[in-house]
Length: 385
Image (cartoon, rainbow, N blue to C red; front, side, top):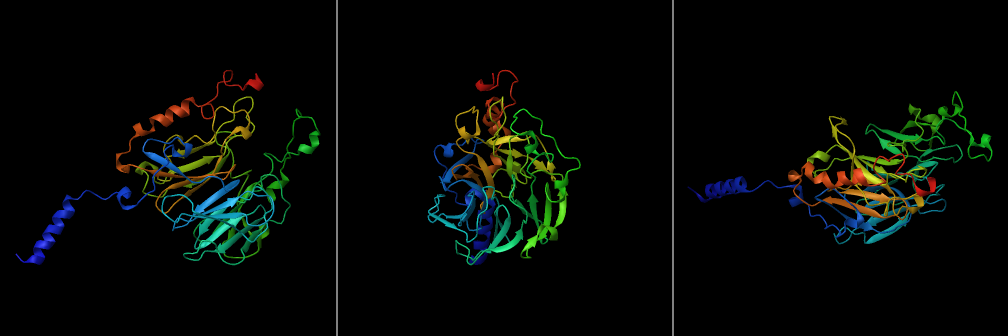
């Protein structure tokens, strides 16, 4: 037997005896913080704080090289975006740089997405994009204007974005009220009934989703196609007043297989839930199978709210806002109050995950005042009793 054949047989034997390579073995993940950045997660998961406070933030996007882009919530001025880069591989942001040569026009400036080599982001009245250069953190040049909302700024004016990978860009035009109410008719009476308008004249330009061409500049709403209507705000309400503000279908392989193609939802948290404690302030997970929900929602990440219960939103320590998936399958979560960003990683062999690892989170979901179904009498806040 010649030496070449012996070498091939040895190689085949070695491969046959080597255990399968898992995602954990092929991707070097940074270690989680000892306290998971203050978060509670299912067993096997860990979290680290990427950056502690970059200012009130909305959504975020993660580039294929790990660079992070965040949309700030600022009322006016320029440089409403933040770029973050980890230079030494420890998962923490070493370079933090603001950028954005455009005028911000309200605190509902929301979106940040990466699509076909462009960084798309939105102020309240305008959708912009900038070309990303390989290896370069900050996009060059002046942002291109893709779409302009010609109407004045109004309540719930966020411009959320989605792409269909067929050239279509979908933009939300949210309505300021639930049913065309005119609060001015009630004067200063806090107990007055705010009446709605039937038929609702706002539906021609608000309360829906319009589709635009992702490559055409300076489009107005009149040039778009009304794709959906009768939706007050896509960042709407499930459970009531929990304020889901972002949804992400997980595509990675780092997490256990049960999370693949399932939906993570960032619940920003309630603001007006009296007489009960404010609720939400968690990241939830909804399992999916064949494109449909395959089970009840469950709390995936908790701990943002701080001490619970709280009677007013301002008492919440953090409010989860945006979600993004990194190139290695990590889950990134942004906070709208201080601009804290967490990175969630799975620290064990994903094949060994079982529903037993969800036990502690299920107990939190059942017992925590900001998550559980409130008792009509026992759970009323002291100020309401």
